[in-house]
Image 1 (cartoon, rainbow, N blue to C red):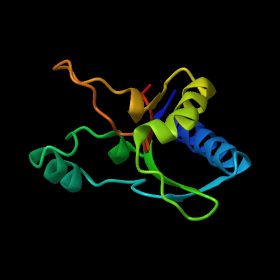
Image 2: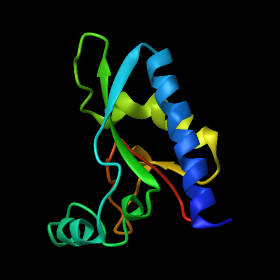
Image 3: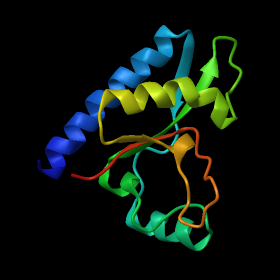
Length: 118
């Protein structure tokens, strides 16, 4: 599978996730959908991301999810139903709320949805 084909599958999955969010009575806006390598380097130096971010390959998106009344969901646990749905869409999809660091601590990135590279 080429990167372009993978990006196409990712985009289709994101559209299904967004529809699911709205069908559940919530709405969303985009956070970060594309990150330049330069921005990834800055985030890595600040400890807020990784140099080899899937955002740079257009295989990751951060979604800001809100209740109908406009209340922004800020806790990873509030995103869990969406993360579970996301991971069931495709075997290579990952939800940031399930990330575990290589150092043993849990990384909470509840609004992050990505797809592993082919």
